[in-house]
Length: 252
Image 1: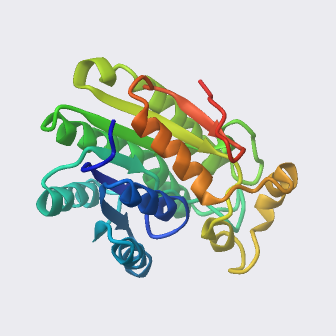
Image 2: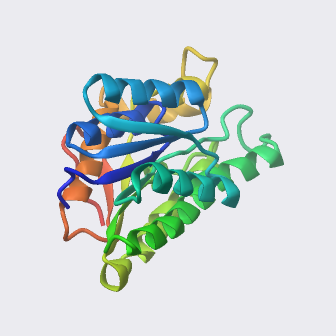
Image 3: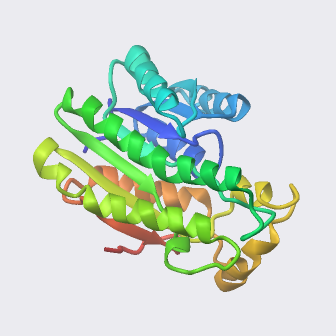
């Protein structure tokens, strides 16, 4: 897909990977709907795009609910007339206190955002893209799906669900001209790490992953590049791509 002139909707675009991807897509000529539950972060992303001469708008989104998902898609339709690219990127972890002392309410919230948010976002995107002859959907999985963590089995489980859901959507390429793929990042330098700890350092449950990663903590732009590769490559569908280096490695 040629990105120039297309409309992209990105969840979790107020910071980290979502913001990096929004900025990159805007530079490539896409109009970007910045979706985030945090108005300050979302507005900051829009302002950064606008200051560089791009087109963007912000919508406060709660991807964990059907009503919030519907409202988000209604807004991109109202502002930009439709959508060609959807990046289901919003995600959270349980954090402290770690498993199994995490509350039932927090477990439900993590599953709703990480799994239901992706599934509902994909369903809405397919229907919206049918009106435009097709499109591209990218989901954010994680290598946590492949490396069990005794401290965060809920997070890893949700990301494994995202990976399988993405692979199961491969047939949409033939039926609806909608390609669904996923990026599976390694450790990325984002505010996500600080939010799961004390605000300045990563949470204790992240330490094994940080030690395993060593100095190879990725910038968010490395994941954004992988997202753009998926958008451009019309042959890719149902692929989960592991990104643990600045140059992405292709998964299955």
